[in-house]
Length: 380
Image 1: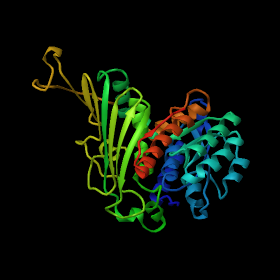
Image 2 (image 1 turned 60 degrees about the vertical axis):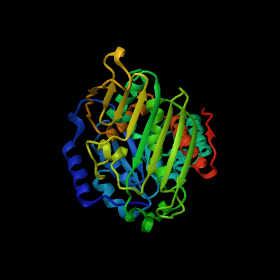
Image 3 (image 1 turned 120 degrees about the horizontal axis):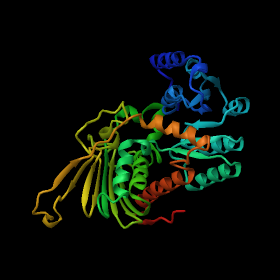
Image 4 (image 1 turned 120 degrees about the vertical axis):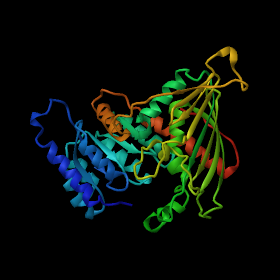
């Protein structure tokens, strides 16, 4: 499914291209030549971000919808109806793959064999075996994969990782995650009706982000148990799920997930990372618990006993507000990182193997909900 870029957005992109103008007088730096495959719901904002990024040139865009040709060309990129022709004719160093999930691997393999580095939207593949096929193709062609888990580039997530992994809470005991919001009826209507079917629910679309955050902040997950329900909408796919996790470091975690409940307790609503979703600056979506302190995220409030001799529930807790400088948005930082990966200056923060692990845990949660059994993970 594709969505055209709104006219005002096209004007903004075109204005930005004009403002940047002739780069002859710009500081000398190596600009990466990129192609974008897919100008749909996620490809459109990716195009806007890439055109503003001085680290790269978005030289070409491919989409099967010919009506998007004008929008692509207004962004300053050459349009191709077939991505195979684009990667054959253009001298690209990498591609951004923003197509439906089942197409990630066939397109990725074809591009890898052309020697192109890959940015692949999450999930890296529809199955673990397909992820392995893409990873192997990239290795054979000596190209690198960056999977689009942009939340790893949010300074709030980076700070939480620093605190948790750095022992700022003592030994990690557990974490509680909430993702609950109400998806409106149009979300499931018309060409989007696939979201009513298996694979279109919050486990694979939304939970995968929080699973990735938990792996990144807390460490690897080696066991999951889940229950799911579809009693509210009665679609074939789940609308609510509850997941229990065990981390390799011994900590436990819980996730409550629902897309049919009015709530602001979700990552998008509490961090402000997703502009089109109504948000709050008072709620939290994650709570990390350690032997010495706890941390509420994303308000970044740390609770602890300032006097170790006076600890326990009969004594008052001290509060510390941790300041985090936001800076650039995560997508901009992510694509700048991708350019560094292509140039060999940086190691992928979310490699193909890393994206595979997140996918494996997420799919295990879905399988556990179907079978009623706990699933042990033997991660590579």
